Image (cartoon, rainbow, N blue to C red; front, side, top):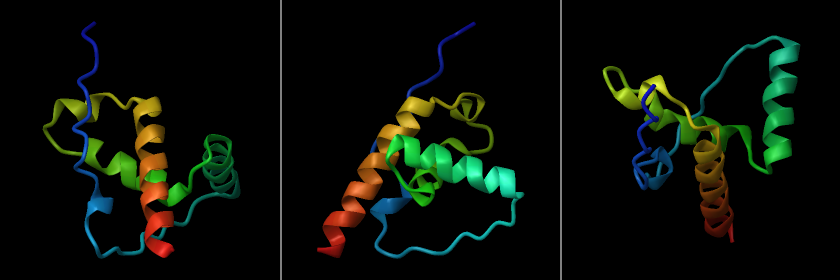
Length: 87
């Protein structure tokens, strides 16, 4: 089995100045799991979703593998940038 390819750093959606809302209706359990996981990692659910976005590309080898640690690291960067912008 080959190792997963590295994510392309610096190409997250949060680099854009405008943002759009993403709405989803999920079960109570899924909702609690998303928010519980985000809280354990110290990030927001929206930052996790944004960090995952670059891996969701059709016909891209990265779509085969999701490195959760890389996603969380990028989510932390996203949340940090958002906090700096709000000041």
